[in-house]
Amino acid sequence: MSLNVVFTEKAYETLEITLDFVREKWGEKTSDKLDAEIRKKLKLISLHPYMYKASSIKKELRKCTVSKQTSFFYEIMKDHILVVYFWDNRQQPIME
Image (cartoon, rainbow, N blue to C red; front, side, top):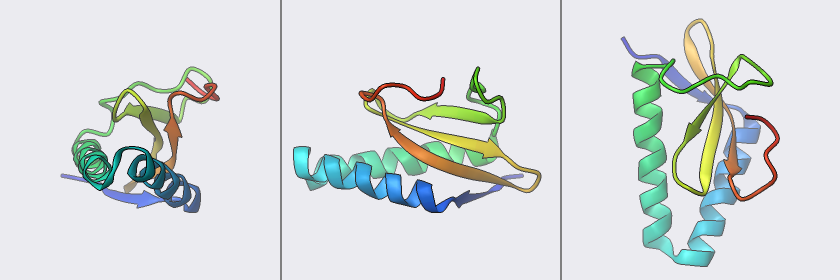
């Protein structure tokens, strides 16, 4: 059984910022590839929510690394997956 995936407003904002940055820096094709990889990871998480490790700072958050440059954090709720925000891995880490 798969869980529905729900995005917070912050997740939508940070995803858009991430995809826009990639599109401007490396082009539409690369942005589309990243978007497809994110969708693939979300599908996997909906089927296997515990496949990524919990944050050592905030246990309810889990980190999914999409690429060398991009990750996202999510929470496992009773009946859905809540995507909290996307993160550029080149930034100073806020939570691991």
